[in-house]
Image 1 (cartoon, rainbow, N blue to C red):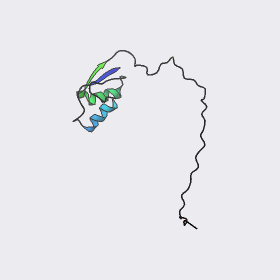
Image 2: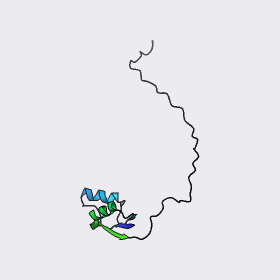
Image 3: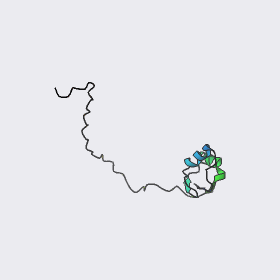
Image 4: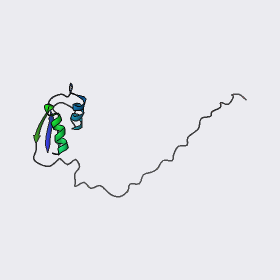
Length: 98
């Protein structure tokens, strides 16, 4: 795991560097994100290394969902609403008062 912190503002850098920082998930100064140590992440970090502080963290990624919470596999019944009928506009106006 890599712990990445944005320590310098991407303002004033190239658009490509700003997009790289954004794709790393960094929006604000001093924000910290953790990513798996993969070659693609390492490449992005290398491209904007002048704006980042990076440290390797031993351990596994944080689980976003608990594995103990099981999702029920039963289908959920939903009521379908009847579709509204469309009214068409009349192309020729009818004369009023006949």
